[in-house]
Length: 205
Image (cartoon, rainbow, N blue to C red; front, side):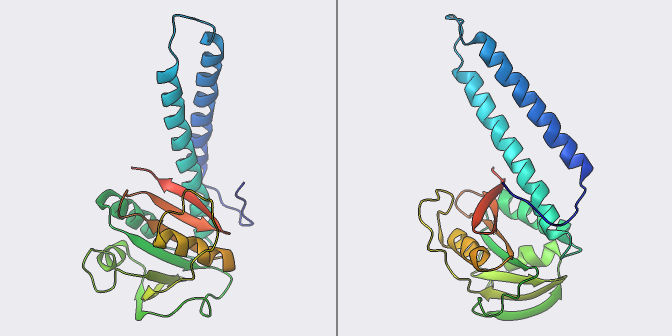
């Protein structure tokens, strides 16, 4: 279970998650009452419940991601817009947001940027063919510190969400620091974030 020490209040998002959970419980209750009906095929219902659960998981991950980022970066909504846009376009990305722990000694430094966080700049960095799109962007406070940084890779095995180098790098840095690392898969468009060695899906196209 994900927890946070920061007091965050995104009431509309919490309300949506609660309503979705209530609907899921209602759907499961319906299944319990119809499971004995020999004339009823429940496979379509199971598929519907699977999609509902994935939607709730994604909404909850987005809620906690905002909670984790809000105390450390004022323009965290720019990050959300960036991740959504990159996911839609299936542009691969890796963004490390430093929190309390310094990550300077964990990261092989790349190219200095020194610019305020904006979704347009972040999207341009990760545009395919851009000279800066490989490696990770490092964000500290409200600044894009650098790009093309190399992050430490995780050695953890057995997690089916850790499918490529970007994901292994995201998890690897989060294992050694309290940084939040966002990653977008260029193969699937799936967007996730790593925290404390775990990867959580934010957007599943």
